[in-house]
Length: 172
Image (cartoon, rainbow, N blue to C red; front, top):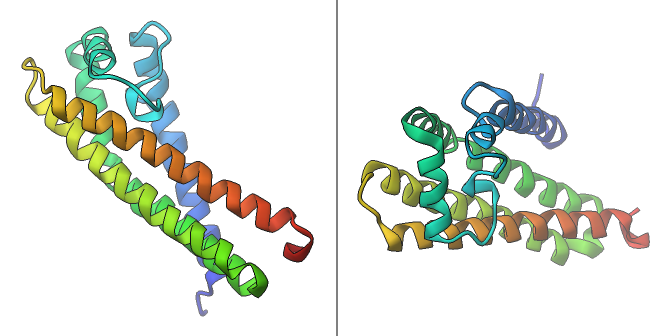
């Protein structure tokens, strides 16, 4: 059986959903950390956070929560490759299906790469911050926050362009 791009996109979509489900619902995941932080979302799913926000949340997490957050960040060193590849492949499939929208599909591909890169840089800075606790690393914390924002903007841009291409009269 040959693997074609559509099948690969479906597999990557399922793996992406599996990662998201694990990140949100497994013990020590986003929802557990949110409970520890009195209802606040963790920083890597929150654009525009400051170093003060990061350190306040880490304090609320406590030792066990920081350990869970570290484990999640380590798992998140695989996830950007998965969702980045999925978004890139969806952009490529859109270009193949709608040659007149190839320029838009190239934007999706560029944003997919950008999102994954920003996610990796964000994770590296956050892991650095965690490794240096209890000392504060203001530059690394600020850089992680900037990368989170750029990651989120890249993902939203990629999904937005994909939506526009699929809804446009030429895209149908």
